[in-house]
Length: 106
Ligand code: FES
Image (cartoon, rainbow, N blue to C red; front, side, top):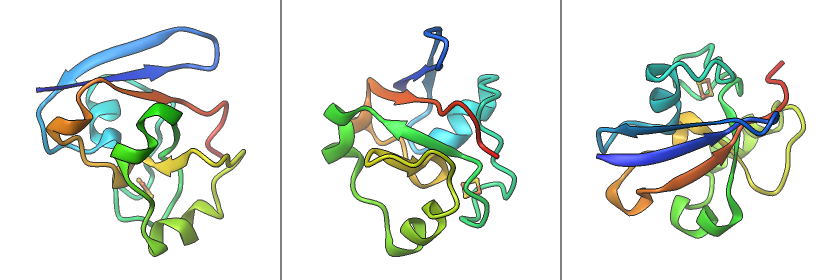
């Protein structure tokens, strides 16, 4: 299992333990984190699964692919730590990952 924390803009948080291999987007949807819309279901064609990765985790989460970078252009309120959560696989090395949710997805 891998633990992931979702921090909401209002300061509340959701911590969940999910099976390794799921994506951050799947972890959110499976645990009622409504801020993740994920219109395209992980097909890298919507940007409504936008999140901010905690800076301390940026190295381990890896850099976005070129295709993800292109889709991130459509994310609202983009920051240097922006990622599309459907592209982050929760491998064991990401146990404890901290994710901040954006104020809005669209
Ligand atoms: S769910 Fe559509 S890009 Fe991630």
